[in-house]
Length: 338
Image (cartoon, rainbow, N blue to C red; front, side, top):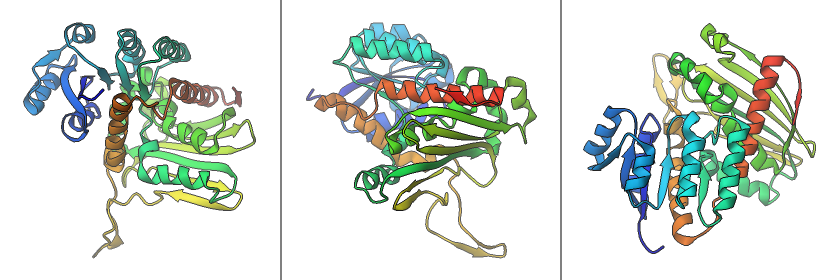
């Protein structure tokens, strides 16, 4: 394109604000020119922080009135599909946070929209693929460093202090498997280069019984069987007290690769009256801040240089499909085949 990519962002909540800061200040070739939110305080924040004048409560009005090249979607999950399709049908490039849709019908509508507009760039936010350690692991697997990979163990663990806040979002987010394990699902597909054949999931509301009232859980475990015989063991927890403990390991026929098993904030060890300890990262953004920036830069580079994004709408559909299968298995207590 040879020019800055004019972007409008929708959604300026907990994660949307970080995205806006990256797009406005840190991503080369990006120009954050407009913002949309139904929350007045969020729009005021965008104006005060970035000096944005083009502020909208209506997403369609933003697309009608602004000369945009792309939209960045960080709104509520239930709005993603409609916003994605509207932008694609207007010829705009689209980045969307996960999940791509809250059911498979929505995901397929998005795949159809991307097929109608092959000249547009579409990316779903599977941010861990952009983390340097995860990207290096993928390279090592490709080089045969551990032989043939056959087992992925991966977990996503969030701080307990966020749990009560999350209960009201379960009906619109799809629950713990789509909200938390979707990244682990994507990684397992990516590392094993295969699709899931069947799943079994279990868990419960061990700390916060209110999750049970919305057919969800605060801690879960799942076993995935892949078509070529590989496996993935995934766990999720909303009740960590020590920090955001997300890590992954990949076992192959000749070795194991382990990523982030210690959620340390840095390499400092503290020796005091409590003993020897390290500080933990506190939330997902602190752990993956480098990856979020790399993800945003890659999206802009795809637009400017006309290269294909690393992830497709199909990747979003497959991860969502597995997430719903895990939810069904958890609620029925049975193995679910895909």
